[in-house]
Figure 1 (cartoon, rainbow, N blue to C red):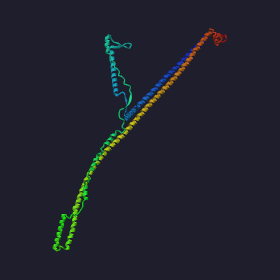
Figure 2: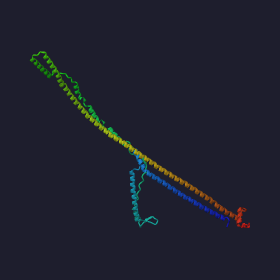
Figure 3: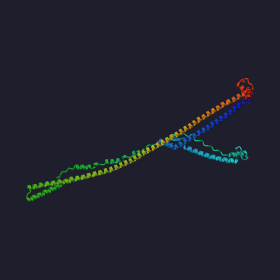
Figure 4: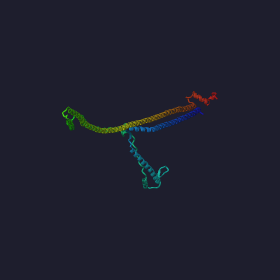
Length: 433
C-alpha cells in the first residue's frame, strides 16, 4: 500500500465525521427554532385571547358609558350603514344562500340524470346523445345565483340626534306655571272692599254731633200745661179771695218753675234723647252693614289668597322635586359615563399589555432565531473550513507519494524522500526492523 493512502483514508473519515457532526448541530438548531416559533405563537395567542376576553368583559360598561354620554350631550355615534341597509343585505344574503342551495340540488339532479364521472374525476355524458340533445340538456342546467355586493366600509360619525340632558329635570314648566298663576285673583275683593261706602254711617254721626237741645216754649203741650196750671191757681186764689195776693204770686212762680223743669226733662227726653238713640241705632246699623260687607270681601280675599298660595306652593314643590330629580339623574349619568371611561381605559390597558407581550414574544423569538442562525453559521463555517483543509492534506499526501515514488527531483534529499525510503524498505537496509 502506498504510504499516502492511509492519510487520504483518514482525511476522508474525518471529513465524514465532521459533516455528520455539523448536520446534527444544524438539525438541532432547526428544531430549536421551530420550538421557539411555536412557543412565540402560543404566547401571542394567549395574549390575544386575554385581551379579547378583557375587552368583552368591559364591553357592557363601555356601552353604558357611551349611552350616558349620548344622553348628556345629545350626540350619538351614528354609522353610515343604516338598519335598513343591514336588513336589506341580510335579506339578500338569505335569498342568495337559499338560491345556492337550490342550485346545488338542481345541478346534482341534472348531473345524475345526464352525466357521470369518469376515471379521472371529470364529467361525461351517460348515454349517447346527439349534439342537439346535449344542447337541449345543457339548457336545463340551472343558473347559479349572483352573490349580493358587500356593504360599504363602516364609518362612524357623531351627530346630534336629540337635546342635551336637562339638568333641571323639566322644572322650567313648573316655574312657568308659577308665573302663570293669577295673583290678581284676590285683587278684585280688595277693590270691592275699597269700594264699600264707609261714609254711609258718617251722616248719622254728623246728625248726632249736630243735635242741639233747646226748650221749645212754643211747644203746644208746654203751652197747654202752663195755661191750665195758671187757671187752676187763679181759680183757687179767687175762691179764697187771694187773687192779687203775694201768696198767689208765689204759687204761680213755683208752678212755672216746676213746669219748666218738667218740660225741660220731657222735651230733652223726647226731642234729644229719642233722636240721639234713633241716630245712634241708624249709625250702628250702617256700621254693622259696612263691617259685614268688609268681612265678606275680606273672607273672599283671604280665600283667594290662600288658593293662590296653595297653587304656588304646589308648583314650587313640583319645581323643587324636578330640580332634585334632574340633579340626581345627572349625577347618575355622570357616574355611568365615568364608569364607561374607566372601562375604555381598562380596555386600552389590556390592548397595550397584549401589544407589549406580543412585542416581547417577537423580540425573544427574533433574538433566539438570530442566535440560532449565528450558531448554525459558525457550525457551517467551521465545517467547511475543516472540510476544505482535509481534502487538501489528503491530496498533498497523494501528490508527495507519487513524486517520491517517481523520484521527483523536488523530493530528492527531502524528509519526505527519506521517510519514503525508510517505509519502502530502505529502513531495513539502514538497520530498521
